[in-house]
Image (cartoon, rainbow, N blue to C red):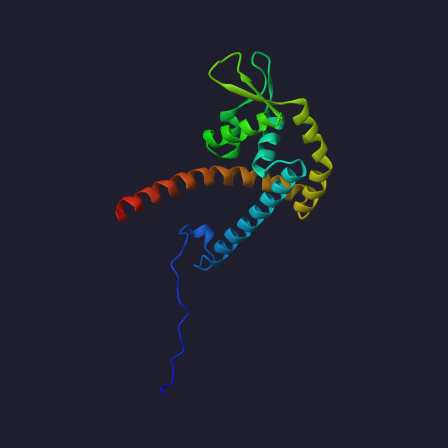
Length: 191
């Protein structure tokens, strides 16, 4: 039986190269941050799904309902509404996916779909009175859950998080585009 030599810790390849995100040359803290952000995103998604369930919608349908309610600004020429493309952009989803989900909401009678009077090629979405009533019934639930979901933030932390989230979404858009490109390149190399 031979004496075993002590093993040196295995050095994994870094998952990030930006020095400002490395701690003592290690990406361990960065990887921990990614896992924490993913866990929090799952929590937000679970709360979103819960809000949808309360009013008989899926989480994505709830999110569309809220986007149409909050961002369907009134344009004097076009009237109230938000385009399917604008909803898709806010969701960071495809127009086709958004069209399918909004069609379901139109079928449920909570969203109204009509042609934009200033641009007949566009479809505008607006809440119906039934959709507005559903959204209003959620406010007490949203308030309770959101108060707990963000209870660790003070005013300064909230303002900092808003700025960071805006920046991270923009970085995320570019990272998803790059990831899609790299997946395509890997598929070409594998073929």
